[in-house]
Image (cartoon, rainbow, N blue to C red; front, side):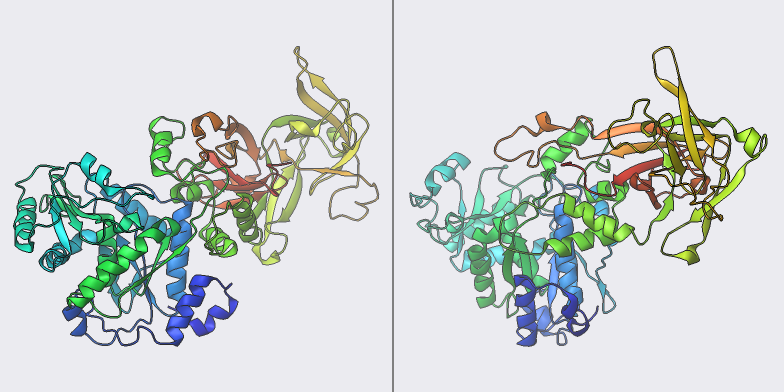
Length: 593
């Protein structure tokens, strides 16, 4: 990890960075010890001074694939730890056995690594699972019962809801609230031993049923669930609620700054209440973690609900979690977004407490800024029509091919040249010919001259059409002595320059033109039915041609197709002899144009 001294000066300020910086400067957590692994107060106190000035964590639940909103949290937590010489733990909040799968665990780890972050530090692998703390969580629950701070409630779920009250009506005490600690402890142990069915009882914290914060009205902290867990198997039939488990996980891991999204702001009083009780009982170390909240990412033209994303997959609207139209990290990766572009995007949008929408164009802008200095250039024809140079044999010689070249990258001469052949027959874009040109059209039409990029100037003479009136060939004459880079090439001035590939050496390619999945900027806001707002043009597949330099391109390799935008060789389907390219984004934002 790098120190704050050599990182912070270049990082944009935000309120969370200022909080962490202030705590580091004041040595707020300097007196803590670290037992070498997560543990209770005694475990940590037996260890040396904590070598990390701050500890953060990224704690996803393994119940789905991560999306772009999670990317913001990953960059925030791992980034702050990196910048302040601290450690960020990779923790799975796997306390719900019915929705969690190993597939999601593996996918999450892969996504975090791909984004450029790691949980190794000081020779230790800081990969943790909340389910490994179930033993301590049970011990903490018994401590709350023994100290009169928790009780077993056997009301029905409907009765509990009715007695909870609302924002204008205080709650009512449960008839089970005044059981003695001994009675509650015996009943809780019966829950643990599997003697009660699902839903028969819950363990609740005993706080204040009249609290104006409904989250403090004796929240449930344990429920019965006879279900096999992906990590602990059938060891447990009671499982902690997230709001109970999460602060305990933070405390056991010596977390300093527990960063959450704003929907957890109302839960912070319970977070503090619980850790106060456990610290007073000597179960956890001091000083205890503190929770801070920030506004989650709301990106236009995107939905991030795991339930809704799963429906898109299960219903076949998209081809899978890694469909390039999905906002999942695996989808963004397959689409062609780079880790650097996503990190740049997250840095640019910043961290605030304000609820706002971020225009998707910002993500594409970050990608362009990342790829422009990196991506090799190439010419591609996506909707091809044949161009025939009718005087080729006369001017250049029958069967002759002319060698042309261009830089792999216009600003990096050291990357060399790419070579291609100019001959009698070429492929051009169908839109590059108009029999009757609209105003301002500077490409091919009868009598107009254009330059074929890196090649020669030609003069259009007309076109051949089929019985339906569709153009099948465009005809033109070569203007001698106009080859790019040769003396006198600029003697003839033209307004139009078009890209092309030679019929003799062009390589066939499937090109997938992806666009936004929804036509509405906020497809699931305000009660909208997001399924009625699907963009019918979110995917168009065309069979085109690319220049020969791309014949050996590898999956995940990115290119700028000149004039068309940025493309990536599909990481699943691209292979030698069957090239498949995905459009990542255009050369500029054209959605609102």
